[in-house]
Length: 335
Image: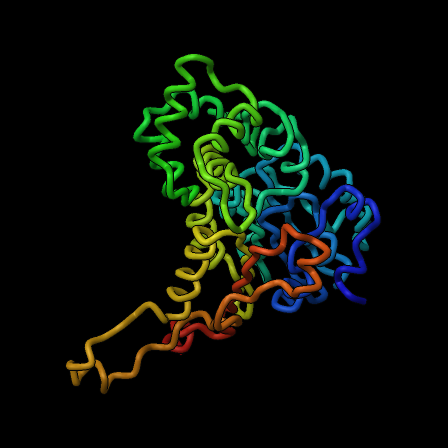
């Protein structure tokens, strides 16, 4: 059965369509008895498809309490032979996955998948404040705790705002936008998504690509509020450590900042980030040690045109995957 055709009508109706699902299953290759870790449960699209594809167990992480509630409601749909569920929910951030797995008494997994995009549920719920297309509180907190986007917009110094818009939002007019925000908040503090979006559009010229002018600013704020790039770096490092021999790690990213980190992970894990001087005869004569991991994708996979036509949110997706060798170099050396 095609992976996309296995989605329930409720998932499609609610707007939750897991991105690059056939490709994720292709590289993850779930098998009977395996333990799979879904690091970003969201709406449960990946977890459901994995559990339908094989008689395996899935542990799913999410920092959003609403996602945990959805997973617990879904868990009865996947009973094990002993009457328990094959879907196990773990509340927390995937940057802390080792500790969460340790608490569940699990050391390694046969497959790990990370979908680094924002959940469709979060984007489509105006009260969560992630989207500039609907009016809602300027929030953006995945865990519903800690400083919100409004706190940053209303209190951060101008230089810090400019850095957020520039480095996290990749906004070319970051300094101009930060100055405008500081001037506007002196008159009226920002409370809603539309309030900020209207200011951004009045300052940032329209993009010839048709992308809304507020896109990059909102991306930058969301990343800053949730420390997303730090989470990704911590999560990928731990994921490599938690793979069993022969285990596969699949990462789906949605913008260049995420994909850059995923690309560095693949290069480091497979030993492709090591270089030597061509003028050093000793380096040329000494074979490089075999890396613990092998790349399953030589470059990032892109979604198909058909998928993009059905799900526009998939357009920017990139997929990278690695596999841990069945016998690591350390094991070979030990005999």
